[in-house]
Image (tube, rainbow, N blue to C red; front, top):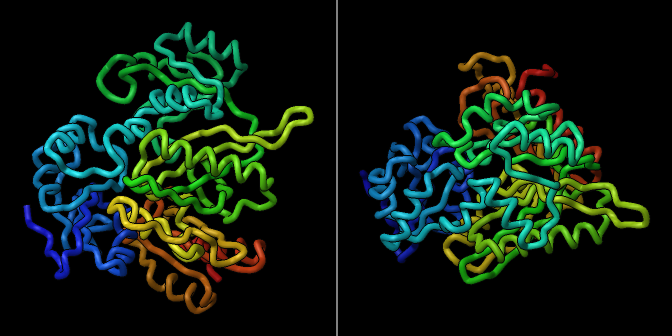
Length: 401
């Protein structure tokens, strides 16, 4: 496997396993920090491989491939959470620095392990249970009320591996696979269907030496299980809720030993009689995250720069917002063909709104696929939402003016 070129001056090489858009968006901050990136990419046309000179192609599931890649890096981090635990264990046994560590990543890779650990820590979660039989599914649904949410403990993302169940019959196919090697080896995760006000996300970063920083709490808007919009900061958020939610995210990062960026996705829930607004934790992601893309243009230190600082144990940057409001709108592929030309739409958006920051991922277009995002900062939230949404819709081809 080819070696990455090292810059003079003793600056390190950060290896990223996975060549998706998250690895791609680390390249700009890496250049600004004087750091070299090397990416283990799925193909030579992967999003990151198009912009990172050192992008050897290989499978993240193959130990020999990952080992050969890692031996030329000072630290290894991840574009996704799907590297097998046995591969991570072997690398750590050989003294290769991995951030986040295998012990921390377990709680992002396995939702059952995550629920158990957060419950032990006293972090607010939906009521949940592990199920391996139809009777256990029925008993949980009868206890908390139907419908319920069923999840595959491993491998799910962007709404995949999640189902709304109104009876055990709705998850019969998953139950039939319980115990088989794969995402259902240890059973299903069942959760109550939370009656929530809205979805929030708290993004924090933590370094190996224990320094931590948190960005403002944001509101995330979901469409069919995919985040389509992020509002930073979350509008009209109770300051007490913002404080306790941030404190919880920082505590999770510390207790789980997370190194790098951690996204804690939450539901804001209605208070009880005389109670204050509250939250329950929905998901964890131990890497830069869609809910933090707004920071690229809307914060003093963006999440990709902060992730690199954190995994290298450099002093963390200032996470404060630059503007009263920043809105991120995801650009999802519509029904356009794979070869659809986006560049003319990109130019149109730049001309129409010079303040809009358009980020494209170098990915082919297909329905529902994230192919880019738009950030707009403004002193007025409605203005930012309108402009970001218009630009995203134009890129998708939903509107033509």
